[in-house]
Length: 589
Image (tube, rainbow, N blue to C red; front, side, top):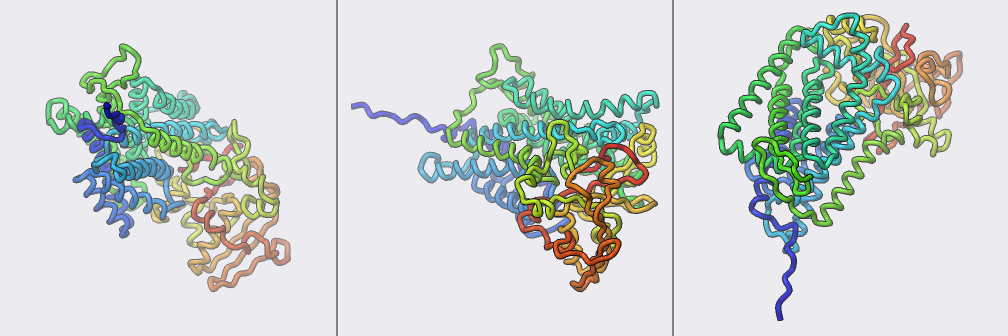
């Protein structure tokens, strides 16, 4: 009898797949080394040091076992910092969790005798690339989707003109007063269209369209990286450039081979990357020297901009080198210098299941959590002017705190009632909220925004939350800015001030109703509470007009439960005195 032969396992690795896996791993290491270098410098900790050492080891020996250790430490370190992290940290957390799961799955199959090596093979590399690509599709789509709101499309309050006009001013491009309204109004449309286009093109089966998506994304992130302080989110751009490269694993392997060969094409790519880095770094540094982000402080060298310019050029080269899939349309064009088309490794059912799970988790993060009111800081709604509490300004989603409708009335009040902070003397609270960064912009940039009838005011309380109060410049002269908060966030900041044994006073108004417009936030009457903390555990709480506070007064309630303190941090919304605009002014991130 003829013995039946088992079909080859898709998890078995061919020699050609070794280069792909190693290129993916080392590309991931590049971002981690850049990112961890600054983490090590700003906040040295045992986890930071361990992660840097593991990433260096992974770079030298890109084995699956070493990579899993580096991934585990990276995911643990970020998880411990939540909720005080950026949206890009959530993005990379979701993508890296998928990679760790795939590596664990491959290790399990190896233990069963179905895969005998310790390399990151083509199946894991391609599964990671495809999962990350669909996660990025959702991330970019959500970034554009949440900007579809009335405040973002109002050119006098939107964050979009702040990026576009300030960037034009920094480049020395004159904008005539006649064109200012047109530029300011079109900025929001261009931003939303660009992010949506990146998402749609990245989802396409056409390699040509996916290459175009990478080009558009690199251009978008170049604008973000070169935007002057305080809105230059360069670490976000660096993370996205690396992740975009990792969606094209065969192009990445071809780049590694081309670079190792040290030929003419490798030299030309290196020269272009060097030129871009020199130009971008000089631009960013000269702008910072003219107007330091922190008035009177020393100017740091813009190494993040340098890193992005280099990575951006290499990301474009990876897109050029990515070969057409075996299933691409007949006659599909291939970029000059691209690797020949090769069929991708077959995808086992387990990797497809991992992809489905982690793409679904990305969808929950992008849409379900913000709509329920369970994610504010860290959601993919960066610089969107989106009102997530006290009423929604989104054109398509009328409520962004849906969970309160499923809660008993008193519990909903204790979590989602809107409080307007009228005055506070706490050094800690004032160092983080409302987080005005207006003085980080140069006088010329503020004047240009004012000429466009923009508020020319910028707030980003989360910058102080994530990086520390030292990054926030002194507030402009004048009366302190009032702001509104949900009850849950009020309870959080009061608990933080009490943990520091601060003696302070606060006056706040609990507004009538749970939601309203900007006039409601500015002027709604309600119960005015005057709180006095003595710094030793004692406090005095009185209502305006006389009377003691009840036990269930918001300032007398305990801090939020542990999961809310760990996951949900809500942003304060500034109230500009004397400004009667009907929309929420720009705040970040």
